[in-house]
Amino acid sequence: MHSTSLTDPAKTYGIHIWGEENFIVEEGVVKVNYGCRPSLVEITKKMREEGYKGPLFLRFPHLAANNVKTLFSHFERAKKEFGYKGKFKAVFPLKVNQFPGFIIPLMEATKDLEYGLEAGSKGELILAMAYTNLGKPITVNGFKDREMISIGFLAAKMGHNITLTIEGINELELIIKEAARLGTPVPKIGLRIRLHTGGIGIWAKSGGYSSKFGLTSTELLEAMALLKRHRLTDRLSMIHFHIGSQMNHISPLKKAIREAGNIYAELRKLGAANLHAINIGGGLAVEYSQHEGRSSRNYTIEEFTNDVVFLLKEISTAKGVREPTIFTESGRFVAAGHAVLIAPVLELFSQEYSEKSLHLKEENPPLVQELYDLYRSISTKNAREYLHDALDHMESLLTLFDLGYIDLTDRANTETLVHLIIKKALELLRHKPSKEIRDILDRVQERYLVNFSLFQSLPDYWGLGQTFPVMPLDRLQIRPTRSASLWDITCDSDGEIAFNIDNPLYLHDVDVEKEEYFLGFFKVGAYQEVLGMRHNLFTHPTEATIRFDEEGGYHIENILEAQNILDVLDDFDYDTKEIERRIRQQIDESATIADDERKEILGELYLYLSENGYLRTINFNE
Image (cartoon, rainbow, N blue to C red; front, side):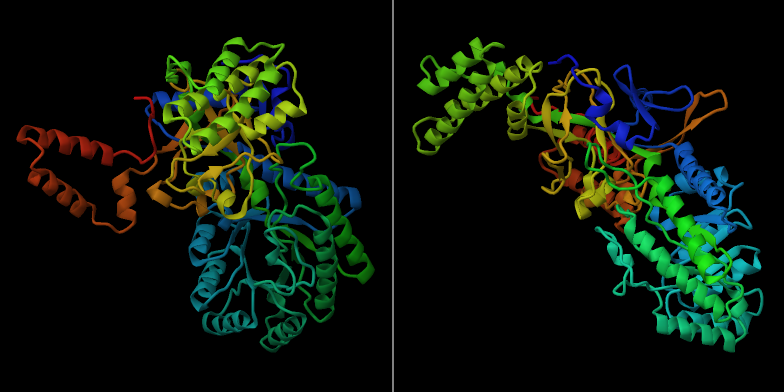
């Protein structure tokens, strides 16, 4: 059942808020606003024609590269505007997304910029050494042992521009020991400072005195004394702070910069002559909101870069020190928007309520008969009144069922008729939107079963309540009429994106037995892949990279199919050969399987084991 459009589809789903003109709505479909501007549904159907079913994870490398270039261009603009003499450099924090389909194209696209990688573990440091363009910055954060620090020394010997950021005095002592053992070159040294200023929001623990990382003022003085004593003061080149991911307000950052700027000036006065950089960490926020007045951040990138440059220039001038090189480690800003999860809707649960589901008796209870009469005679003129009557009758009839006055058939007819009346009333009233109708939509929600795992693909929604933009890929010239709750295919009640009146999602009333309906989950390129869990043994969706050539055409490349069931079990350290042996033995020993069936059954099971665990089709009416 379709209705005509009364609203701007782009505004219905807030694409003008979060889309940053990277995705647009044209001709009723979502398009990539680049090159030949292909639609996402076109790309999706091409992959499905090649046999890739289930959810798809699409990467758009040009979007991540553009975000890096945007960051550099805005800092260069701000530097010019304020006459700032320091440089600007940046690194991508690997913890945000370590996948090769993201990292390798990013490093290739940014090789002409002062852009590198940040590592927080030994594995990440090896990746940073392998893929950072030689001479570009590498920063190493997080807790370190002697081995990790030794790897940093090897990176310096290889010619990498590497800075080991000290989280505690013990790490500085390890560097001093390794310098005595290995000699030169000694990597650059950074000091992470524990600021008084804290962040805000759900990721605020990275800043403030209670934060996990950083040196107190007393420890900074102790570090300076150690560096002087061992003649390594010249290796101190950077101070670093990070007040939290997804900073939704600019004011904590401004306070932190003032505090860090003064610490920078004081350390230079104490003899850190080669200290020339302030790393302001990450936290540059991404706009996830789909609704006006509910922004994920209260500042623009222009304001962000202006504030950083202006404040550091002001402090440097006041303190009489050189203007520092500005480092950032913005990861979410770079990575989030480059990826889209596309998942097909498998079922609308209310579609079990159809006229063919009615089992009316020759003589029905009066209220059931009244519901049937309402359904047959509903019109635009009386739709609102009949809708109210239907909802009242449903409450009364359910009470009668609880008391034993009507039977299960009467209850089933009640549920079916009320849903049919609601659907028809909403269609008839589509030209007359009102608060009352919206309130009814909020009460009567459609449950959409979507072929994905929330725990695998959107773990931050489950763990932190982080929302992501969601919208259908087509039918956008048609007004959506259903308040939508999204259910994933895991057997976990937490696998749901419930309808929320403060962040409502409205979708179309489609017959998925006759037509495909795809949902796009946007801005999922930061953290979601690396944090995704294999709840119910669902694995990473089939992945593909969408590249554009110089003529604007696009190519689907680097398709990485979702792991099959045996591969997932193997990753969990099951002996898959043993699993196959046990299943084969059970088939051979089964008394209910005929001899001529055994080979066929075994072959069918092997076929299923060689596929991924996502669903292909589903029909509850079969």
